[in-house]
Length: 169
Figure (cartoon, rainbow, N blue to C red):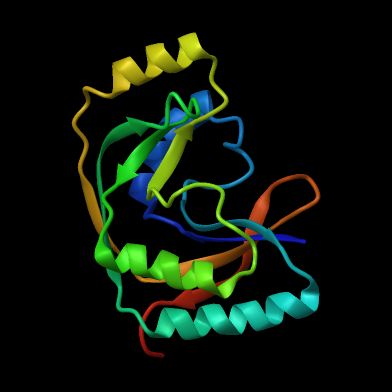
C-alpha cells in the first residue's frame, strides 16, 4: 500500500488553495491542500505499524511550529507546477529530515515546503497562469500542531491513516 506524511493547513488556507486547485490541479478531488513532509512510499500492513510508532516518537520531540505562506512560486522549468510557498524554517527542515531518516525509500527532489495549486500544465498555460498569479501579495501565518500519515485508496484518493499531535502527549 502507498503512504505519505503531510501537514494539512487550516480551512482558510485550504479554501484559498482550492479556489485555484479546482481549475489547475487534476488531483483536486484526490487529496486536500497539504504540505508534503514525506512523499509517497510503499509499506505493508506490518511495516506501517512500526513506521507509525516511529512517526509518533518523532512528533513528540517537536513543538507546534509556524507555517508562513508568502507568495506564489513555481518549479519551472523542471516541472510545470505552481504552488503556495511555505517559508522554510529550521523546525520544518529538521522535521522533514527526521521523517526522511525513518524510511528506506529515497527522496526524489530536494525538500521545498509548498502547497501545490497547479500541476500538469502545458508550457503556455503554466506561463500564463503563473505570470498572472506571481504579482499577487499573499500572507498567511498559522501554527501547525499535527502531522498526518495518509494512505492511498484504489481510486487514487488519499485518506488519513493516523494523525500525530506535535509535542508531548
